[in-house]
Image (tube, rainbow, N blue to C red; front, side, top):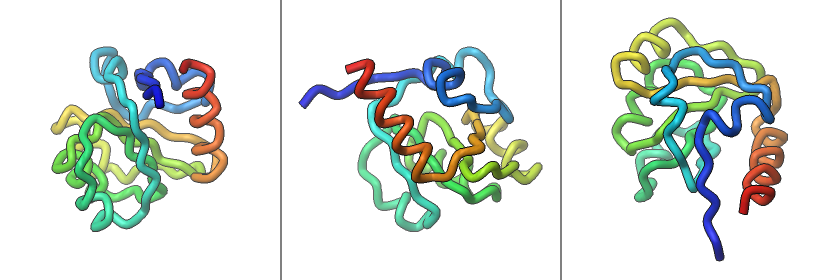
Length: 119
């Protein structure tokens, strides 16, 4: 099974993602795996690094968790806007935060199709 490597920047336009924080270098980071989860305690059990964290949670705990597990970025779904503390901490930790109007399910399907197209 071939793993598709995509950058955050490569998914930004096709998935109509809003950038809440993150510079060009951070958006250039690549991921192979995606984790869609709202339970940060479950995220902490993940053994992979360099994955994309997709969640509807908007607190700074998301950035803390992403930093601990080595996620390359955070995508907030369901049209959520990050709390100011999340943006501030994510900037301090060099973790880009993006947002989607799509539901978590719809975002996952769209991202999966995009990854298949790049395989």
